[in-house]
Image (tube, rainbow, N blue to C red; front, side, top):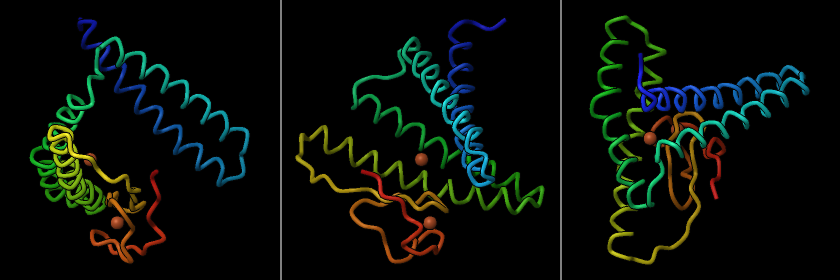
Length: 167
Ligand SMILES: [Fe+2]
Ligand SMILES: [Fe+2]
């Protein structure tokens, strides 16, 4: 039997995953012209977000922004120092090049996210005023860039048009 604390963690993970999955299912349904099903997926995805938020709230999983940055730094660090390196090795053992490629992109970008979060925390702690610039995210590899999108993604080589503006 699991504890309620563990159950909350599992429920949060499951709802978060369902949210993402349904949004991807909605894209597919849109692409196939199933507008009503796409909308249904998006509606249920939204409800799963409500559940995820409720669970996380009960878990007291959202702290101050400084605390949240520290938590995010730890998570990204774990991913690029332990999780993805092990996953990449295993994918190599299994000669699964698609999985290796997917892990490789994520691994590179988590390292970058880690740095972005460290800088953000540093600036908050120093009380430094920062200029508000847009972010751009490469829709192929996840590269996350502040300011303006590069002509060509330095991580995956995709053109500027692959970058999505985040305001
Ligand atoms: Fe990341
Ligand atoms: Fe990229």
